[in-house]
Length: 315
Ligand code: AKB
Image 1 (tube, rainbow, N blue to C red):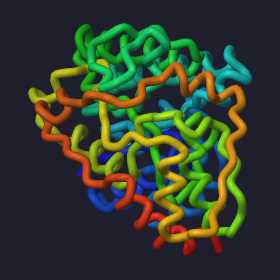
Image 2: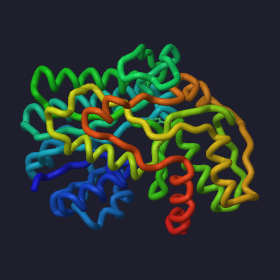
Image 3: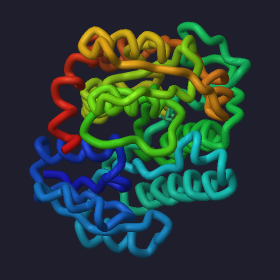
């Protein structure tokens, strides 16, 4: 069995991906790492260790010692947090990716996974059914780092044969862990407020449409891409990926079917401008054609699943 290293495992995506990878490869072959020691406590089903992605010697030593063959590099500063400290966001997002790509080349790793985002698009991108190949002029530091990162992924694949694969995630919504510092985070918080019986204040206006995806689908897409035959992975920058698209008003209405007294108000802040620069919906036909991507959850099915399962995670 191949050894798999997950960097940034305790984050929103990593928390669920680490479990799925452990089920697939066996916990003894999966190493969950994060900078936050407390957050590693939940990984009692696989190996885990504290790791700072910027500490290159420690990362290299771990890869050698554990004979790692695949890296999932998930650590990043997201869109909203990135705007508060742009140079740090650039430094962390770019340095870490370049280091992982270089390590993959030197150590001849089998595969690397690196998430990109709808943040690569910008205000001049066509908003509806945004195509794989179109104008991309991101105006957040996070988006700029993801766009540059995509170019580096393709470069390392073409020049050095590094088998790096990537998806442009929409906003990810799950109930097992909280997101941190993104513009799409409201769509997770809203469920917590509804279940807690509290009023919800949305930081995006009621009719702001964004591409979104239930975590179950995101994990499936990631594993499908990573296990697709090499020749089927025709895009080596990053694949457009899509499932659902909704506004704060629509997600609120889907929750209200179960919680009729739930209330919402709208107080857009600086994140509104970020959301306005991103697409409303995404055309992911390349992912569907190349490696058979198909999503399962629509808004109502996702809401029903979250409202049923989230309470157990809130206690
Ligand atoms: C964010 O909002 O920054 C992320 C993303 C869309 O990449 N969830």
